[in-house]
Length: 190
Image 1 (tube, rainbow, N blue to C red):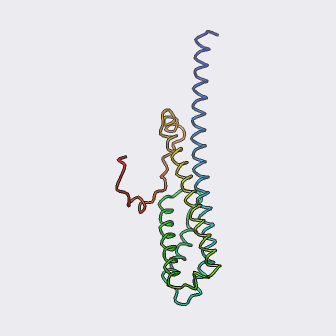
Image 2 (cartoon, rainbow, N blue to C red; image 1 turned 90 degrees about the vertical axis):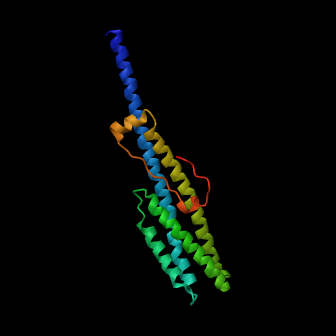
Image 3 (cartoon, one colour; image 1 turned 120 degrees about the horizontal axis):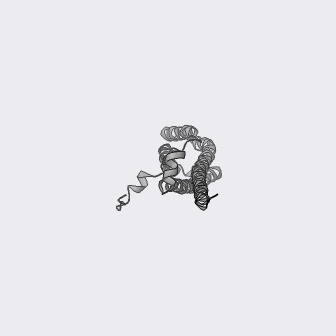
């Protein structure tokens, strides 16, 4: 064999290995996004397990606001409709807004019913829900990080070329809270 043929074969082999490595990296990042989304859904489902107990405890108070009970029921329904398979940051944003609305409604009810505030069961349930909200926030941060890594992986050269030819993956939206960001005066221009 000629030296030029050997050099050509070595270059072709190195390029093929690079393409395979990039292809696999894109798949790994996509799987990390899926895993992170599943973690977010797990935390949301944990919160959903606490809500019926909280509803029972708070519902024992005869003058409890019907609107709040309706919101709790709606929240439970929305949590059940979130998909484990497909990341949907918009649906998650709706769930988180309703969660905040329910929690603030419960806080108002506690002010109206001091005996509710004194209930150990109620306090434990509220602590659990607060912890779940913190866990959900952490899971969302991890999800957004993995989405960033995935999106970078399919946009950077030469991975964008490999993705365009082989993987054909599209960008994934990160979770964002438009209500929280509306309070900032500074808006980045990107």
